[in-house]
Length: 400
Image 1 (tube, rainbow, N blue to C red):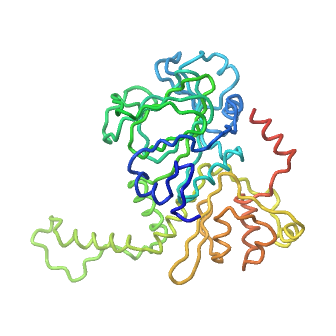
Image 2: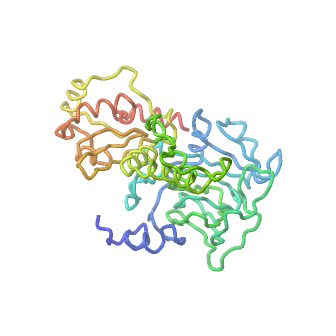
Image 3: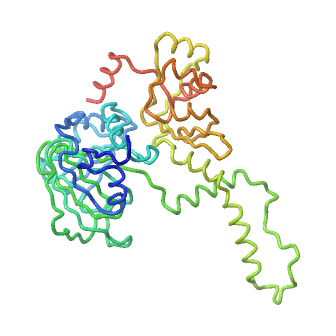
C-alpha cells in the first residue's frame, strides 16, 4: 500500500503523515480506529490464560491485602480471582498474540511500521477503578479499547529522573499533572497512540474494560553497546590488542598520557566500525523471540523430501506465533534471513516471502534452496503445520 494512502485506523492520516507528525513526537487519539471492534477475548478467557504456566501475567491491586499497589505474578488460580473486590484492580497478560491467533492477526493492521519493531500485544482487564497508576513507558504503544470504557489522561513528556513512588513494584509517578484537553473516555474501537517518555494514566470506567496494548521494542543505548560488543568479541582474534609500536619515551612512566589514550581509542573505534557486522548483529538481536521456550522443535525431525511431498499434496506451513522474521540484502547481493535470533544465508525472494505474511505452500518451493530452509525452520520450531479445527478448539478450551 502506498505510504500516502489515508488509513482509517490512523484517523484518515497516511502512514507518511503519521510517521512525520506523530511517531515518537506526540500522542494521537483516533476515534473509531477499528469500527465495530469485537474484542477477541472475554475477561474469563484472559483470566484462564493468566492461570497457565509459562504465561507472563501480573495482578495489580490498588488496595491489596499486603499494601497499596500490590503486584502479584502468575500463574494464578481460581481462588486468587475469587477473593478480589469489585473494583480497583487490574489483570495484565503479556504476549497474548503468541497464544491466540485472532489477537496475532491484529498485528497486520500495523504493517505501516517495520515488523521487526513489534514487541507484543498485552491485554489488560480491569473492573471500575482498575489502574496501574500514572506512569511512563520507554517504548511506543497503541492503546486499543477492546470492550467497556477506559478514561485516559496524558501528562506530557517527563524527565528520566522524574520522582516515582517508593516501596512498590511499579514505576508510578509521584506527581502527575493532566495536560488540558488531553482527558478522554475511550470506547471499543477507539485507540490512543502514546510515544516514549509520555506520562499517561488509564482508569477503567466499566465492569468489562479490556484494553489491548500494541507495544514496540526499542533497545536502550546501554543494551545496544553491550550486546554489539559481546557479538563482536566472540569473533575477534586474540592477537588484536593494544599496541604502541614507535612510541616516544614517556616523560613519566606512571602517567597515562594522551598518546596512549588515543591509541586505545582508535583500537576501540576501528573495531566497532564494522557495518556488515553491525547489520548481522542487529538482525539477530531484533528477531530474538520474546520467550525462547515457546519455540517448539519437531519431536522427530522431518526430512526435506517428506516436507516437499506434504506441500505438493496441498499442505502449507505457518509462521509460529511469537516467531520473528526479517531480512537484509548487502551491497554485494548476499541476503540474510534473520529468524528468531539467528542469521541464515538465503535467496533474496525467499527471504522476502518468509519475512512477509505470504502463504507458505508448494509455490514457495520454486525459490532456490527453499526445501532445505523450510524443513530447517520447521524442525527448529520457527515454522509449524497449521492446527486442525479440533486442535484449535482444544487449545481455546485450555485457555478458558
